[in-house]
Amino acid sequence: MISYIKGIISYINESYIIVENNGIGYNIQVSQNTRSRLSIDSEKIIKIYTYMNVKEDGISLFGFLSMDELEIFNKIISVSGIGPKGALSILSVMTPNDIVLAVITEDINAFSKGQGIGKKTAQRIVLELKDKVDSFGYTNKSSIDSSITASSINNMDSEKQDAINGLLALGFEKSQTVKAVMESEGENLTSAEIIKSALKKLSSK
Image (cartoon, rainbow, N blue to C red; front, side, top):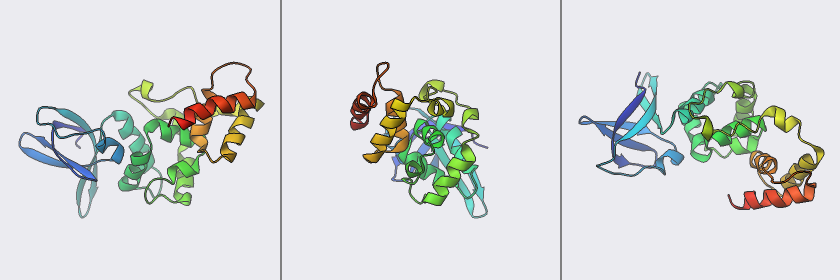
């Protein structure tokens, strides 16, 4: 098992990178989010956490810049019918925090943005991970928004619930809408005031 590889990036492709270490080039498949944060630099040593997928027709490496991304990846591939490439397609369009939030809010549409992830598959992800989301073993807690939980969502006051319904009617994504509403500034706000505050956050994304 290869836990991580440290080396220099010698090549970046649309779907994979090559990391050179001691004269050996490792072909590592990465998400679009990961790829966008990398560049070829002969002087820069990087550390890529890896998942090794062993199949009859070969061995593949999947790479991540943080243990949190790898942890989320492992949770997603534990869902029946989801393979490494499917999990990588989700991580290409969602951050670990986005994924946790989408599971908590049961945001099927958020997962459906991943290439090859249909509505039924997205529903299965939410169903199978919802009871596991609190046990995700993040190494970097600061990268995960712990203020939004299933309990905090269920205990929202009526003004926030009305604001969420209003924003959903405007076509905003459920998970991001819930996050924006729960982060609205001020106390005892009306639903209209909450919507106004949330719109500022949603429009800046």
